[in-house]
Image 1 (tube, helix red, strand yellow):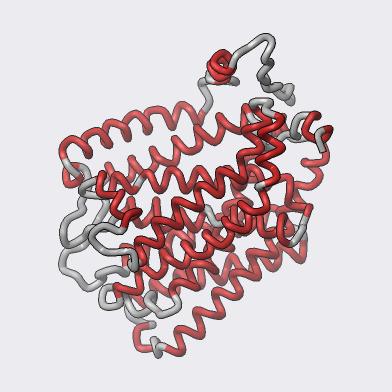
Image 2 (image 1 turned 135 degrees about the horizontal axis):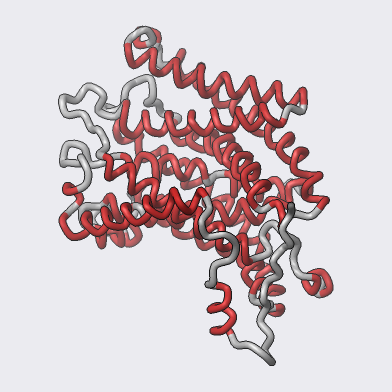
Length: 410
């Protein structure tokens, strides 16, 4: 049975004040003892305890990181993989605001919100991975390595892109607060924020790949190539859209009561269109990988253990989901689209973990294996992000329609 859509308590200057409004919105809404809450709360509590130990006793107390292995799970997954998952935001706003593909507008806000929270939490996770967390400011001011460093550019791209995403999302916050003048002003800045954000996102996606160009002697030849910045951008397109497909499928079930009939009807059509984007993107990526493989004459590595691992990644998590996306687009098979999106996301994780951990210093005597604490902290960050996402969607007009006064103001 569908629940009635909760109506937001908008600010009324005659009856309430901002403090009372925010205080009311902080109260729990909905069931407390849900399966997700029961699973996530103990993990979050454990993760917060581990974080406290990390900051009080040092990074070596909870991780297997060392001078020989300075990058581990927190960088490889939270940052290197996370930015690819957040790529759906810049792809979707490009499709809607630049290409005017109005069919995808109903999912723009939730996608931008997902992207903003991903960048916010994954950037914050960098504090955990730095031996001296407060030194993170050096990335922004260029202290120690100069303003010509790739890391300096990536740091500024991250910071500015988060601000651009916040600006793109800000009209929803204004609607939640019933701030009509602010909403009109902020909506007027949306297109500029979109153009700025798309540029920044493409730059920092390639910038993360450019960081690994300096590790030519450390990364296995099957994963290292001079086109890594471009490959990171291309993979962020189908990786980000696959995350949009997965999250959209889950959100349509969890927040079913917030969706109107038109949104329900459009859901399958939206997934169908996104599957074509993923199929084309994966075809470009797979074709480029073949060209790079031939150009670098990597055939001698192919039947080595690392070569078999490379084929497992390319055939099982690029070629297979690509074919599934193509077939699902032809047959309108929504279930197959969801399966392909999951395989694609697993492939993104595998590829980024290969580049940053598994195939990184692959011939080293000292091999890095994450501790259980590192896995728990990673899950903690993901679960907290989901809690924040759920809190915002429940209260703000993200999936449901905007208030009536928004259309009346135009």
